[in-house]
Image (cartoon, rainbow, N blue to C red; front, side):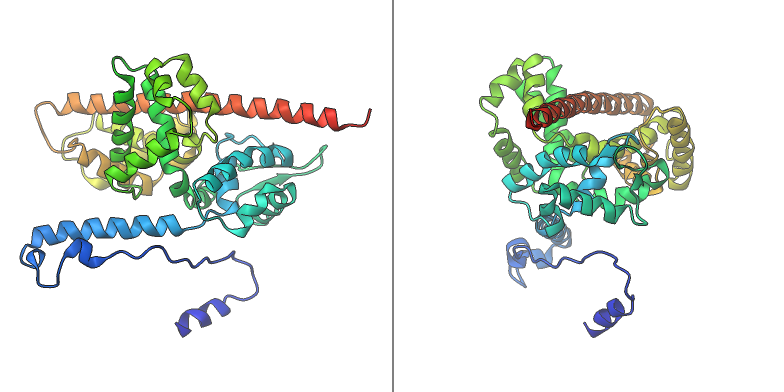
Length: 374
């Protein structure tokens, strides 16, 4: 490891941030692969599948040991404001729900993230990010404000992406609740079906726990809300109230750009030939994506990315929407409609998140007025 130490020393005095070294719970190779000369050794297909499952488990455990950082949380928050700048007070009170959630889930957090409990800690985080990084500070008014401008969205997304794993399941919960609100028939079944469907669509972008553990994790989180199953079954206003009481609401911050990328690719496929090549599909998606950004049909230029379109291609291949088939056009249209319905669910959750923000703002103002000397 001497070369690594010398390389780091050679980078000079500039502060590039911190490196966190943590070790998750070990994975037993024998549990997945069996004895060295056991049955799997004689079955290449079974061995390949077992190796894949073990690799996913290793990746999942690494994520569980990865600490959430202040830079990731701040960038995630500012990327949801659509370019609007926030004051220090607004940043501070909005971040508290995320910190509460991480503590309740016992997620590891960096020291910088723990310091977000105080306004001074928030100020240190945004000052670090605005020193040649993706956050812009605007001075000269009554107080400084911070924003992420469009040209810095991709850079900010790098930091945001480092914390998605901590909010992945709770974001899926929000979208599944939004879907269940207007579902016909058994809304509880609709909730669970949609949660598993979203997990399946996102499997090329994220590592998940196995299906049973994933369901257990969601059930455990939903159990924080009294009689949650009754509220979901009732639908309508009761799901509105359930989501408004949920803290934090993270789906827009964490997952919207991925589904926007999927939608762009699905839209391109509407009139694309069967067996369209990777390069051609990507070029068409980039063109349509830039058009949609200009028309504000999607929220962020971040969704228009060759990297996101590469996994979107995997998604549509997994849905069997590339190879020629008699019903290909109908299935492509159905998939596009499904994605647009999911994006409407994002809109719904986003509206409730903004209502939460307004309620917090009003409360903070009242407390500020009450604290002034008479």
